[in-house]
Length: 285
Image 1 (cartoon, rainbow, N blue to C red):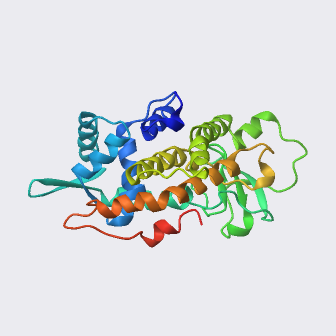
Image 2 (image 1 turned 45 degrees about the vertical axis):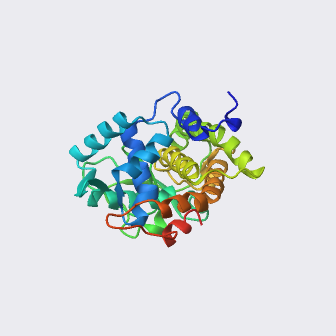
Image 3 (image 1 turned 90 degrees about the vertical axis):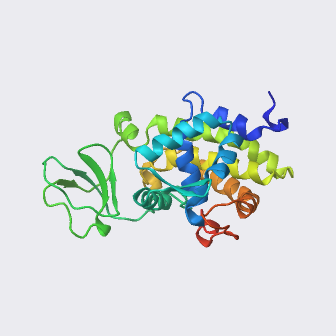
C-alpha cells in the first residue's frame, strides 16, 4: 500500500504507529484530551470525541468501552447536558498532562554544556535532595549538575571528574537502545507525511487533527522517558535532535488546519471556543 495516495492516511499512520505493539484506545483518548481538548477548556461532547476517534480507525464500541474504563478509573469525568454527554479530564489528570507538556513540547530536551556535572551514588534508604539538575540513571545512580543543586547530597557518594572510558553497560544507561529504536520508528512513520506536506499537500482539517494527535501520542511516550542529558554524554548518532526537529516541524504544519476543525467543533460544554489558544501556538518554540 502506498500510504501517500490513500485517503485514509491517518488510519494507516495509526496502524504503522501501533506496530509491533497495538495502540491502546484509552491511551489515545488521553492524548487527544491533553493535546487538543485541554487547552480549549477541557470539555468535549461524546459525539465530537467519537468523530476524532473514528478518523483514527477506532470503532465506536471500542471507544465507548475505553471511555467507560477511563471514567471508572478516575481519568475522566462525565456530565450530561440534555441528551448530550460531555467528558473532561479529571482535575489531577489535567494537571499531570500540563506538567508533562513541559517535556513533550520543549524545543530542546538536552541539558546545556558547561554545568558542574557529577556522578552520584545513593546507597542509603533516606531521601536525597531533589533539584532540576538531576538525571536518574538507575535506582541508585544519577548525574547531577551541582550548580543547580544547592542543597547537595549529604547522604550520597559524589564524584566529579572526567571519564577515561565509558563502557557499553554505562552508555546503555545513558542512552538505551530501545529509546533510540523508538525514535527511529517514529521518524520512519512520519517522515513520509512531512515530505507529502512539503510537496504542497493540504490535509483536511479533521485529518490534520488526527495526524497531530497521533504524532504527539508517539512522541510523548518517547519524550517522557528521555533523560535530558547534555550532548557531550550522548552517542554521536543519538537520534533525539533529528526526531524532535521532525516532530516540531510537522506539528507546526498541522496546527492551523487542525485548530480550524476544533473551531467548528463543540469542545466545551455550553458553547464553542474559537481561536488557537496561546499556549498551543507556543509549543516547540
